[in-house]
Length: 309
Image (cartoon, rainbow, N blue to C red; front, side):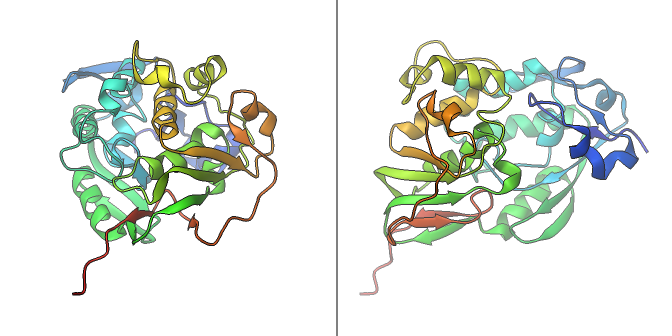
């Protein structure tokens, strides 16, 4: 068996306690600065971690959930991004790419980001994918693109609602609630979904502990510490750069239409210091508000009710 590589993208290295369950496989943690070029795909310079490039082929292993840019996580993305080089990841997450037409959560077809990721995955030797789909509690295995297409059909990611609500409460699972960087995805997923179910000017409440504060993605942290909501400057002028900068762009798009609040935060002062509303407490909300228990698996979407006349 070839090496087991933990794809990190540009996120922090995992701690030994986090790798405990796979220690018997002697995992290697990905290094975005030790990569081999694989060729350009749709204008993106491809590269993958050296141990992956040396292997005859790769099998991606991961979880299929909603994803802001790629439509769904998993598949070729585990190799193309998770094991990608710094230049590759930066080019994929450039503002022009992540705001391009067709780049949207839950969309696989005609999605330039997904198309680039799939091409980069093929170039990086990703042949097969083994994925877990929490929304249907099933494992799936096969061609990376085919697996995702089938998963999307089965997981039914949208729950229709026939009236827009004044606010929504998003319960972030512990695995995604460690930092504001990770937890904020739940809010932007809903805010930038195809048919947001919350009225413009409404409030999105994230319930997330954020034990690691803003997060370890330095580009994201630097942007938040030097700017203030609604971060309009991120949407025009020179594109921001650095690890995680794309997440700040998503927050700027959210801020155009919604108020964001973090509740149940163990260190609200760090978030408040950069203009993010955060509290340790958790408040009751009106009955007219939406509750989203699994924002990474299924989202409410506004749907005009069909006439019965």
